[in-house]
Image 1 (tube, one colour):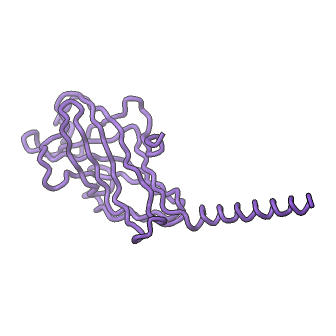
Image 2: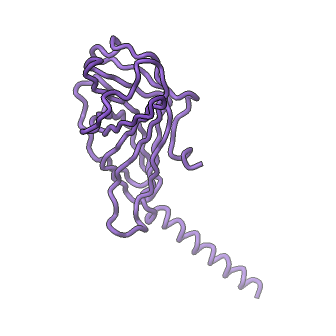
Image 3: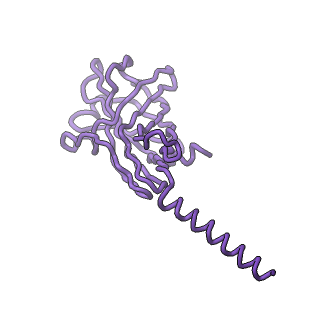
Length: 202
């Protein structure tokens, strides 16, 4: 009887393991994660009295799920820690600043267990009332990146899982001479560590 019970337990365990493997490799909904390095870039290529701010953010998007996830758009919100002002930006082009005109942003398809890395240029969202979110003097800024992800109909079981990514950066003294041509200035994380949605959840 003991041998039969042991064999039954082994079979049940094997069945559970098989079911779990099937879920992880075939069924699991898209689970998207965002990674941002400790340095990003900023430019205001026009002039101080006519600002057109652009943030250039190297992003890595990873899908830890089994099913394909599609990122339709990406929104960046920037908060000035000193004034409390907020300004929204939309992913508009791909590539580093000044690399030609840049390729227009298009939906990003992430297969299961896949990832993609791109430098994304964020332009001000149409209708923004804050002319310039960065001060001329050094300051600290809070960022939030939100993904608009295609949903799998009304079935919540297959709905993508994604949390916004929040992180902070600091900037030095702004000098418009830096923005001549394809010039930018760096913003950096105070602890020089990458920001990820994984650390958001801890």
